[in-house]
Length: 323
Image (cartoon, rainbow, N blue to C red; front, side, top):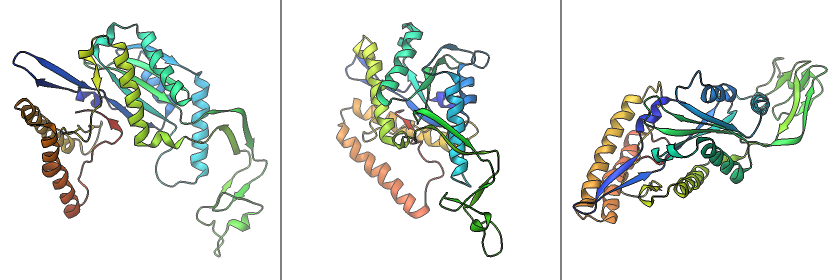
């Protein structure tokens, strides 16, 4: 996970409602990412030698679970004979927390967030509670499995070379997967003697976890959970409204070749959001600002895409809620 995502700081807006009253509107922030090395990632977030401000960890399973999950996912990925992309072994949520929660018992806080996820989705998790290096962002790393462990695990090894056609159907002889030139047809493959030819440790992946609807849902659940812990209603969080007058910030990933483009875009978004603040203070209605956003931003971006193609840097759809 790139440490630069925390450069967003804690998202908030200041609106002057009266001459002497200032209300801070804080938006919750959740980021999801794919993990291609779940064991390595778990060590990174939970190893005090690798984390300067690691407070506590919590897991619903033993480490063997993640090792077997990675093995199952790598096996399925290889079995699918995919030539592009990387195997996704698990997924991770980064959940930003308001600083007022630093006074809450950390072990209890982390366990509450993890068990809430397991209650909602019935999958296993491992998590860690951190501050970033500059102590400006209090956050949780929550790693979860997209699959459930089966009641009975099964692993079978080939006693001889095994041949499979384009539809992953087992055939008797090598000749059945060769083309007219005697070469193995595209999509066909051989499992050598001694290697695994069938592995059933986990259920299929839950496709819901890949959807924006899931991220939207889990963000609402965690926003409600945070607000239930915070006693002062003035410190409660809100959920960023993408249909509102503000523009969401974009993620600036570590070693992102388009980082400078994204940073310039973010600065323009900050300027727009500042103008929205001023307009609201001066009495412009939110509906009028939404219409202006449609005319000056949405419509013009759409027209530019039609003329020039997709922009060089697109919004990060896997982050939900920073303005």
